[in-house]
Amino acid sequence: MPLNPPSAFSGAALACLEKMQASGVEEKCIHIFLIQHALVRKGETGYIPEKSISPVESLPFLQGIETKGENTALLRQAVVLKLNGGLGTGMGLNGPKSLLQVKNGQTFLDFTALQLEHFRQVRNCNVPFMLMNSFSTSGETKNFLRKYPTLYEVFDSDIELMQNRVPKIRQDNFFPVTYEADPTCEWVPPGHGDVYTVLYSSGKLDYLLGKGYRYMFISNGDNLGATLDVRLLDYMHEKQLGFLMEVCRRTESDKKGGHLAYKDVIDETTGQTRRRFVLRESAQCPKEDEDSFQNIAKHCFFNTNNIWINLMELKKMMDEQLGVLRLPVMRNPKTVNPQDSQSTKVYQLEVAMGAAISLFDRSEAVVVPRERFAPVKTCSDLLALRSDAYQVTEDQRLVLCEERNGKPPAIDLDGEHYKMIDGFEKLVKGGVPSLRQCTSLTVRGLVEFGADVSVRGNVVIKNLKEEPLIIGNGRVLDNEVVVVE
Image (cartoon, rainbow, N blue to C red):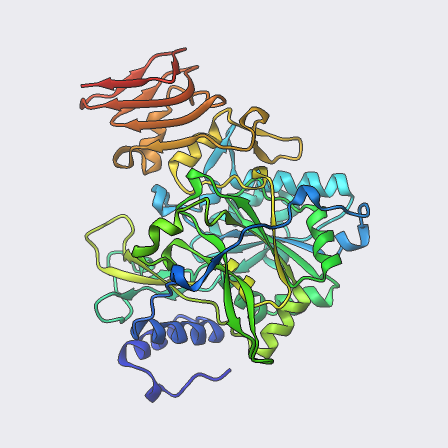
């Protein structure tokens, strides 16, 4: 699709165009970005007001889905893709988030590789595996995979799908930001919704279809509960779906994350009003609607970002739209250097992969057990995952231990001290406390856990002194409040 002539762009958009072309950004990505830039410049926020949607009250459960037995032929039509573009800068990481040690000295990428090896061996099926990397994660990821020769040897040809990059734009004038101290900070991946553009424009979508692959399972690289489930593959095939989203019931620990809803839209072909799924992320919620957004009794289901795509349906839709999916843009306010709150204020324009649920004619959502959702977004999440509240299964998934009944402990660590990984490692340098019987744990101030500490029920630790509070070896904290002044 040719771009509009330069005269059609604002000065800010033209500066973005020139910057992207000079850096070799793919043309369809440029086109999509300029559409988004124009919307944001005109005041588009991407907000989805509460009054424009209605709650999803019930959905089918994975446990209730019956299959006809394993379909080997269908399994050979499936591809697995992990999203691996994030650096985890919100946790103070400088390298790929997937290389963070999660449990027993193993990283996210270790577990992913081991899950794949186990699946291939048990199923006797060489399911293709792909990683969508970003310009920030590609090199270190490839180097790490040297320890897994079967993956490393085909990294360039089969595994890597390179995510696009787009410029961060200044909040004051919408021009691309410059940051001489570190020019790499001027760029950002355009969100995981970019996966559709990259699959199409890279030729990988056509390649996979030509090889007979029909279904793709996509999940976050930091979600070690997400593996290819043959029941969902069979369900998608039997229902002839174009798109399937795995959701979980929201709990208090999920209330700030995106949720699924219904939205009435006008069918362009028939002119009739029809109800479609819509995904509302936190960045799309107006401030006045935050209470409703976080109401887990009203909006019951959240997107795990475990997504199943019918590749033929995706190809058809992309062809019809000339390779440009009109996913809603999210305008995320940040600073150009995530580590420097005083650096220039910017917007990052991003699209969510799950938002495509509203674009496919045949899309559904299925409620899955919590064991298929075990991500790490914060150091609080990491503490839970490293603890005995989670266990490693035979197929190398990290799932909640049985006695937790599908509910993770609610962890609230002091953001001043434990938002970044360096502070977190000091918290647990003596050992990770047992959280098997923990309902909630709140930590305020400097604290260091000793070895073999157990936390049970609801526990609050508050240290108001400047020196660290040491929680001694073997101590049991049972429904208590510890305050040191």
